[in-house]
Image (cartoon, rainbow, N blue to C red):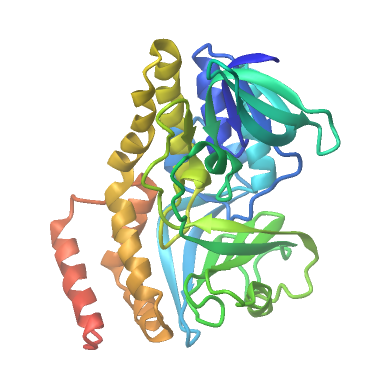
Length: 393
């Protein structure tokens, strides 16, 4: 494939979604993904993702109905989700998304991205090694490039003249074999979230069941903090310390969207490369696919009409849908993750039925719930009381 309308670098949820939708629109698409790459990820997806992106429930490894919050003092608060959160394994889930894109007509290549190149007339080309590092470099001329190659994006570094500093934590997890059924310390239908300084001084840790396997991980931006030790603490608490490790993975996890996602000419970023990850929770799969869908729409318009300004609509459309959720989550992370005293109060707040209901309604629907003003008022005053130390019940 020496010519294509669009080259997409990275075949995770954002890149594979963009490739699928562009191929369905009839564009010629090169989808390039590094062989064997699996991102460290808890794997949680809301039901709205299944509906919006036509993902069958059969792609889920498990359904979680309860979330357990664990405080610094080991106080536990079980939150009823009021439905389910789907759990996927990124290895098989991302692979299925790439296969779906290929079935729609995208040309999927496993290979190593090398560089972007411009010819004498400004024609853009992608240089890559199909099959791995020792392969011969090939080149495909394209009209546009979508950078979906993660937080350390090579596309971003090469295409964006102004380099923004991406705020991120480093995430590490171990995929281990799950116990056979429910135990006093582990529930295959419950995700455990650790808000403890010893697990993460500025983020959180997780134990997320994936059916036959379980993801145990944590994130932190503090240099020198041992994420492996944090994972060991959670494995010990869940009695998973003797369970076989299937694989270990680590990677940077963005915490804030970049201010600009396109180069104003013919390249646009999506997913982790653009920082499209929710603050506080670090949730990325739904937002990656949402950004990929926005990119497909904008790039198709760009290819058809040649108007580079259409590429700026990717970030504009994404933030129009998610700006306020990201704003609220950013405030939560800035305040509640500061120290263990505040984390203790945060977990205590999670006992409140109004907090639980509105939290999960917002998560399931990916928007702030506006239909219950009285509940919001109650939560506001309870939060305020917690902040000044009145400890309301």
